[in-house]
Length: 194
Image: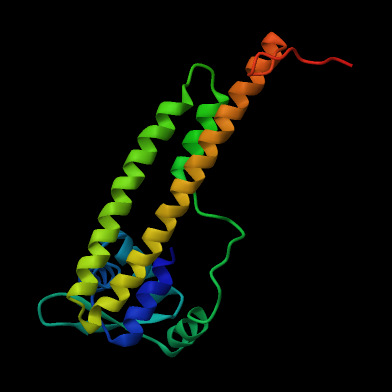
């Protein structure tokens, strides 16, 4: 996720101080990806260093207000139409966990898959309920939240399909191991050797 570009986009809308940026980001994304305020200010410092934002002074309550520069506006105009890169996929903790589980001795993968499937189904139910509730009481400002919910629903549905595939692969692996060790197919047939 590009915190840098997200903050620039919010500043393109209007000048803000750090806590306002964090609150605005979380409000517009349904607080699904909370920002650490230290991360916000570190990013603002880098954006200022790079000439994309500048300090506009104080808001009267001691908050430093940041505004976007013309170079920052240009970056936002280039960011929105550009496709999100897929060269380096984000780390997926579940994929890493299962990859390690199948390669380390003594780890039973089936309970790992079952536990994740239960958690993913519960999350899918929560996302679907939240979407249904939001649509029933939809305000114009809810469109951004609905986009985030739709993304979460589709990702979770894909994760559940992937878990089904993982489970099928584990069953196939077990069947192959059983076949190799006994020389018999799962139906009791003797393996044919050339």
